[in-house]
Image (tube, rainbow, N blue to C red; front, side, top):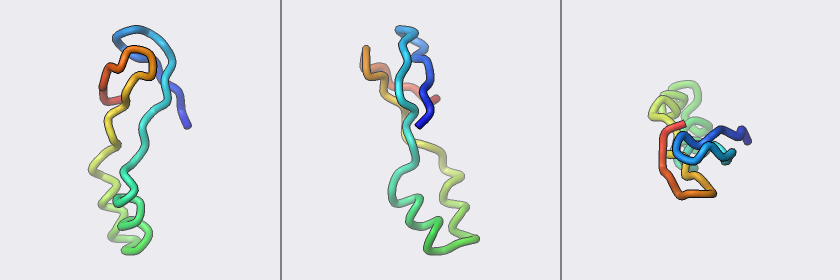
Length: 55
C-alpha cells in the first residue's frame, strides 16, 4: 500500500483503501459495477496520533 504523510503530526502512515463491498460490487457487476468505486476510499487514520483525514 501507499504511505502518505499525516497533516497533523507529519509522520508516515498507510493510506486507507476501498471498502470490501465496493470491490465485490465492482467485480460482480463489471463494467457498470465500477461506478461503485467512484464513492471514494475509507478515511485514513494516522497510526501515530490517531488523526482521521482524507488522503
